[in-house]
Image 1 (cartoon, rainbow, N blue to C red):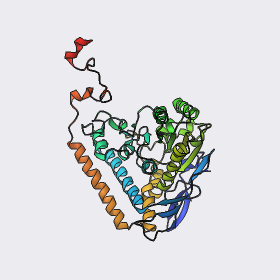
Image 2: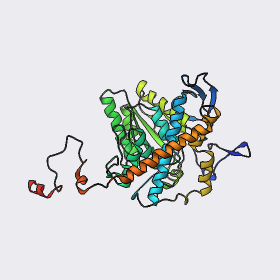
Image 3: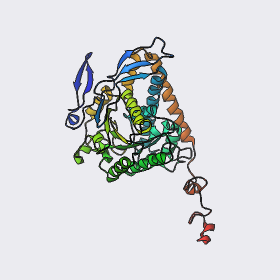
Length: 407
């Protein structure tokens, strides 16, 4: 049964869904951004948490129990998640504008609309857990220890970029973020390898290996599933199902579009990826499954939505209508959903949230100016960062003319 999308018209709530989404199989979780209910308001929000209850259709499971629908969360974390989603959204919007101004060249894949997944993931994991993903990597890079200016500068090809301007949109890293990766699905076995290293070294951490529905049919994904289950690795495989893998519906090439069930003996959970509370709860459950309970790998499928095309070169309107995108923006936006929570639950006033919006804009505007002011890499920078620091060979063929005689 197709997932419901709630639309407010004339002060009442109706249930409707874009026609093309009604035809897609496998979705029974709600994908509304504002169905979580307040069940207990603290007498002192500064020190006590809010108690919430997720909608009963927030999760759908395969070979495992569902995460608890009851959630406790503090005022400070709610506001932090809201602020971070705003910063991520504005960073992607700035990247869009810079690309259209021809200041960003090459491939550029934006995650506008999917902020609940990246921010919710970060709030559900620990500092030393690891994350690896594919194209839409900018929010993860910032949240895992990078900076907005580092991402923007990288996209502009400047020295201040997180990869010193040599990686571009898909190759940004931190010590716990193993990058965006440009080969479809190839990051999944690398994530399984990172999880193997964690288990081998006895670390009490896990790796979240993200991929899109467009990568779900890659052979290496299934090979990674097999090895992860064979060795019971602490790996959470995360399918960000934004409904249009590689620019078209992945259903056209998938006999089973319930991606959370495709791990054979690996249990899975389908999650409402438009509600950040549900996202955070699912991630915490998955981490506990792999690390604390040592049950091996798990698959999470987040049902989410991207507002832009597959990349900046794709208008995204040949396989869906502008009306559909606008409908999702106006009724299912994850930031607006959290904003509604915060106002209705008395966490923050409209004016306080507008102040956070203004702060987010200032952070991104300043980051853009810093990135623009950074110089471009010099020729000599082309042969740096080839090897891990401390392991460089004394000479590299073709690097400098005077070194040629050594070969």
